[in-house]
Image (cartoon, rainbow, N blue to C red; front, side, top):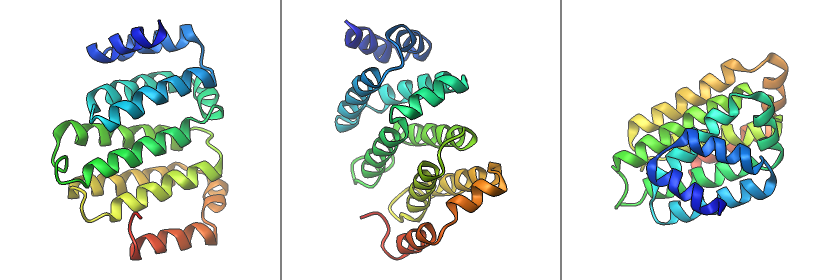
Length: 187
């Protein structure tokens, strides 16, 4: 029943209704896993408008700090990064490179990453988000304005962090990974 209702919200692009459904179902790891399955299936089929609706709904949910922390504790960050990598793969394929819906979806990911950067995301998870943005920005096959937006998002996240949090993510391992990405971007 839940999947059918979510599917209806996604078909209509109704992120507000999706938020209500997610609250009704409960923000549990099971609910997040079911949502992950739908998003992953859509990304495999290039259903970017449906994924855009999910990201907008997550953005609305995340305005409530408690809801965001619950989602993070259930593994939202890892799922988002897997979705983002799938979008990256679509953007670097010849068939999808200039797809307007995919460009909009990528920008929505950047907006959500900004939101995560302002949340009390653990430093290790924040490091991984920043590394993904750096790798994305260095990918020559990606549309240049999107790469610039990745850099802006990267910088905005860093600027919004406290000095202590910046120190936590600026360890030698992360710097080595970023430098490695400049030599061998993505894969």
